[in-house]
Length: 596
Ligand code: OXD
Ligand code: MN
Image (cartoon, rainbow, N blue to C red):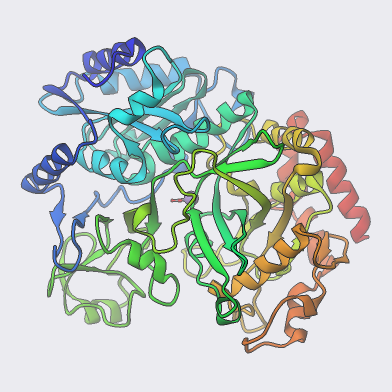
């Protein structure tokens, strides 16, 4: 036993009595224990060693074919009152959901081992960190949690012997039956139950389930914020670092932005970019009145396809050791991994993600994918060449700017600044992304994704916006400035106009200059925009006129975005009834008046 905490011991006993495992193993976080588990997973075929010379410590895993992504339609917020889950979440009452799940968990681990994983979200010793305990029947989950969080005895030390403030997570693979798959959250019980999945986002319960859904609810009650945001630092040549948080919907390049490489124009002057986090930020007001952020995670669970030496060399280097690859393709010539766009040479002797041996180039030429489009790497943060020296700082880092973004072909300009925090909250609430040709279905369909939290807010989104407004009141003039960016504007032929990737730093530099009162702005109906000549284009193949085009605001398309049937802002707001804060309605009316 790793703890004397009676609350933990009682709950683990209860879970063991329910699931009836053959044995219970407590994860202490030691190298010996984890190494023995790796070997065991290899011996049963659950995992596989990759080439240990080229990829030391790296392993491979394949999930079931029906189990390759988060399942939003099987994800539930089980608050006592339905209105506390709100219109953007699936809801069942705690009673009904326990009634469904308890019989499913009964004896589900018979003949198996139950692993008890104590973990800390956030640096050990930080007042901003929180502890979770996940019980699971999967070694893959244990090994991933070891990379993504701080596991073992140290987490129990963080919790202490008396506290009951830990998030309970119960995971069982059961039959991986997608019809009986449930990812259920009980915010009022500090509990998460996951069954019939083995895919990361559904089973690494520290991540989306705890650090966003449960934590957002805790944050509302305790006066802090859990957000779907990367955290990065920009260090100037004088050695001062300013930090930015940024929220983008899934698959909009958060990991790439978090690890960006400064373009030559800044690199030669001595600017550096540091990664604090690529997916989740926990934010609290510090003693100095400012907003401070920690990354609750300890690793990166990144999408592999699209990661390459041009798009994100730092991510690629991060995955070179101690990494678990899931559902990528295997290069059998040297027992390494491959995915679409890693390079132009799919391996001839390949195993595609479902496990069939194929001729890679022929397979790809026939229009197939060797790696699953949502195949992943789970990589330790400490491997990242640009990991921030503040990564483990229990105080976190002070935030100068919050950036929202989406994927919009036309509407949103390259960048604009909100008039103030309230308007910034409104800007976050109307965030949206358009579907791309890369995914099945119609192109250009707008999905509203407020603060990139649509699938991750653990309570009523209307109350969440009110919480944002309340935080703004508390922060007063110490509040970070709020911005919106769009890297994805296209020309008439559908080509991206802005180069993106490392060059996004040019926009971040205007943002920081605004925060420091060092840059001018032009007032537009939607917010403050840069003067086109204030975006640094030295070394780029584009002109000031192109920047003008990227900053143009088409009033008609904004009006359409507000009033469009189905996916417009008004239709979206209408779903919230009287949970919509009056301030949000006021902001929308003011925007309409400015556009008129
Ligand atoms: C993720 C997501 O996996 O947002 O980070 O879906
Ligand atoms: Mn994410």
